[in-house]
Image (cartoon, rainbow, N blue to C red; front, side):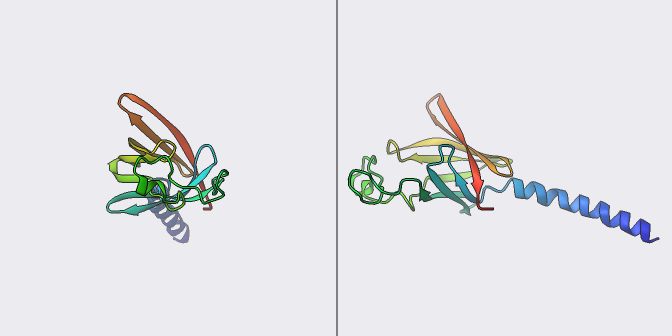
Length: 146
């Protein structure tokens, strides 16, 4: 009798444990290191989708001015002065499939926003892709500080 109960508990644990493992791996929330290793982005749930904000930079200061790195490539002069740390990268990032979100991503390197798709590809990997017309590219980010 005890043996059957133990088998039942093991089966239930496997049955109920599997979805939570999948849910964890599909969760984009957390802090991610960009592929180049030059920035960390905190991703969190917001408005039914996800948001991403720069929380760390490898080089947080402009080497020429000694001032905190700013959004200097932004064509809007008022926005060009905002600091990169705290800068929102994602806008309108809504679910578009299992473990996938679509919306816009901001590229501080050129001051433009692009159509983007983000997908969780593993427990500690996030694929971030952006497109300009038919030309697309992407990189894989790695989860930090789990």
